[in-house]
Image (cartoon, rainbow, N blue to C red; front, side, top):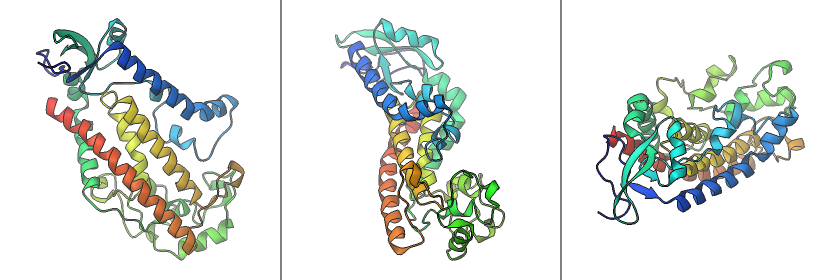
Length: 313
């Protein structure tokens, strides 16, 4: 057999490729460097007790902790060689796996215990796979213009607004007029559930948790951000690099989501996308199309993980 192919080993624990100690240490170091740069601002603000209306969302709405994001994983189908790799045997979902080393001989590495992982997380894998496949199979709808954020503050008293410390760019009455002058077509349940009671009847769709796979679509900013959620929920079967790729996309999408929102974020350095104007709508649609394209690539990579797990499970 060629180096990196599988040898016989415990059912569900076989790995398709082996990484030498130098190779996986290099990837781990690059991962740490990348994540540290992404987290620096958040960790500094957290230590100082300073809130951020845009970036905090990535650590409050999403449950993946910074320390977990920093943890590098080789993902399903890869084993780590060397004595240092054995430290991972103390971590959940890792086990000894048999692979062929560079010498062509069978060696023991450390990798994902796919049998244990799929036994415990099989339903999650199946749900994520079916959802991602459904979204990938439908065209992107690009005409929502981010009005979900406007619907979340529609006719609210100022003290009840989620980001009450941040002023509304058009004021309460101007914000309400934008909502009332547009057709709202929000397809994502986790955005729709935050609509105010007065805004809910204005939505053309009625998203539910049970019907998420029927309505989520690749042009939706929230569905694109959620690729990060599905990536870390499948960790450590997903490579550390792919989780961070999804995090970076979610970070970029969140910025656009809030720039197109009714909030005035000038003091945080964000220029508004004025979706109440034709120019703003065009800017939003262009960004939405770009995010959908980036999301499609990451969605396909996540589906490969789901398929690999399903095959071994």
